[in-house]
Length: 321
Image 1 (cartoon, helix red, strand yellow):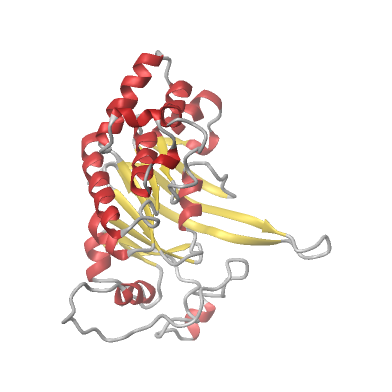
Image 2 (cartoon, one colour):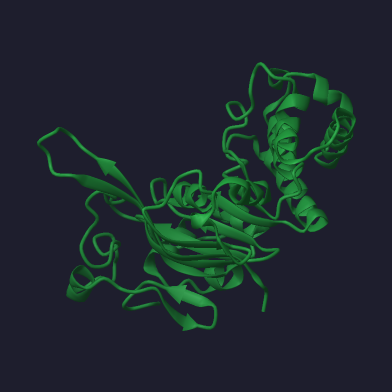
């Protein structure tokens, strides 16, 4: 069994909402009671509709957003209690590649300054050593060392995302969040970037948390999958189990909506009806019951727990498929 790198327990991230000084205090329950273990060396995909809490979960794990409650352990340390130098060391080992390669790179800085800034903060090394490391990491992501003397606007979208990834791996981290890293790229460029991510993961012994709504990308790159719905994890397990034997009706409908690249393949149409509920006032009982084809009175009344139905396969449903 793989060693756990990140352990998340009862994690909640709420954002206060106040319409006026006289209104009742409300909260957006962006992440609500999430429990998961991210194994070392894995690519752990988090999927779901827009607004399900995927990105908020990832940013909370990195402490870019402070949680409301819960525990986050990274490599055996509770990172929520860390400050100063201890927190700085954890930050070096946890990096992120943002979704938008156009806005995540400073437009007025040379690439060598964008990539090298983290090394100046975390390492006491000379300018020559920094330049050599930048040249090395640029080659690792498929660019050349002369690119360090250019600005971000001089590159294509795929090249910018490679630069963003170089900025993340230059610090030799253990864990990288990939927040929909290919959604802004053309399909052909997506394929090249994904291939690069898989190769460097093995070379650098990295662990990924891959945030996406594209199930085809999950099928290509992931080892483990967690499916989120209105701030909760509704199903979690190995990729093969989730794709071949989904146990939650929401996961099953997601899989049914994933296109198959075969013109002769005919699939029964099963559409996901309705809109995702508000995270401010989620439905009582099971949060999916108002869209679920199998829901009954118990689903509307009683909230299901995330339980293990088979070894390593967890589902939040009273009547798993």
